[in-house]
Image 1 (cartoon, rainbow, N blue to C red):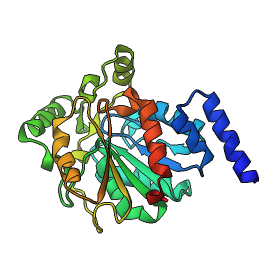
Image 2 (tube, rainbow, N blue to C red; image 1 turned 135 degrees about the horizontal axis):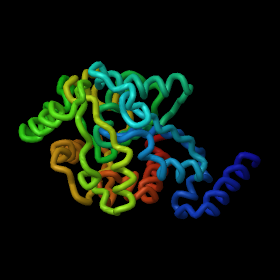
Image 3 (cartoon, rainbow, N blue to C red; image 1 turned 120 degrees about the horizontal axis):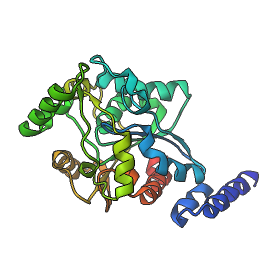
Image 4 (cartoon, rainbow, N blue to C red; image 1 turned 180 degrees about the vertical axis):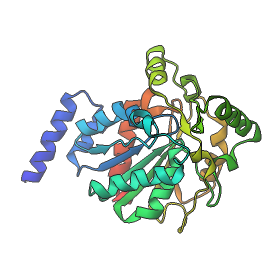
Length: 273
């Protein structure tokens, strides 16, 4: 009885905070632990709006910033690669003593959380790929990019790498961020992406996802061409749950309310328990 009253109180607080009813209702269930991993050029900062909503609904949320990006940009170096970023997230799981985590990866971080699941599946209960990239084991990020895109990125790295082999950030419009205030905020926070993350292959010991439930959230506004092979792969595989959001690629910026509601809903489904 005390447990039920506690959650009922959490639901009331969430509703009072102005959350959508669907998200406020998740506070009546057992709260979940989310680890939200950002994509290329971004940082943990980009999840602020989503994290605030999930926390108001009673969930625990971590938004780590990967090495060399965001407030950790001073750590960028030629040695930062995909393994570095996988280790970043694995270490959060380990040192925060996290269990039964809903692990969410946006864009480039789809590759990162694939590696995390391979190394730390026992700490996870569900994977969510938000408009994310997938790689076949043994391939690098550049392996599946069109040749013209690879050459464009390498040219930018040569011209602006600053001696650390970093790829300059794309403009906010490339991520579907069109609101002027949001675009200014995003542009002021984007930082160069370590080139090692493009070049290092993804190496997995187990099949992608390591047997965990997998959901792919497709952002249907302003689709990004480089994601189409991944989306075709997901649609053709019955092992995936597919959901959609009618917004641009940076859904955590452009549609934080619907995204938070969807994540809470996915965490509450029996298949992820």
